[in-house]
Image (cartoon, rainbow, N blue to C red; front, side, top):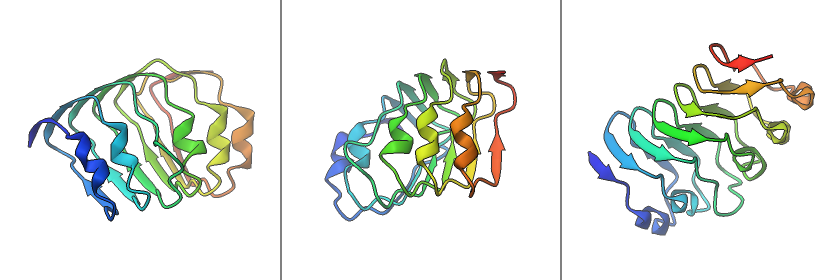
Length: 147
């Protein structure tokens, strides 16, 4: 697959799992991709998506696993990925062109078990608030500018 992902994916009100990894999809990721309200897994790694990472358009209570790695996303790691997805368990944001600290709102994702953000352009201090993530098993942030 190649080209832009149609914003109409948000109209798929029963979409629970979206796997589009390893294609040549490009352009911005439409925020409407989060609009189903029942989305559980979003795997779009290894594409050419660019621009800022979108935020869910509203709370995504079922969103558990997200892999945005190996795309051309830039800008900040949005706090809304944590605050609007209270049941997020896995977030993969490795190999991106971010310029961002780790948002302290990550501590709101109390179900988070896996956070992979190696080679992603993170910088600054690791927030002390993350100490409350008692379910966290894998925290991979190598090859960044963290202190």
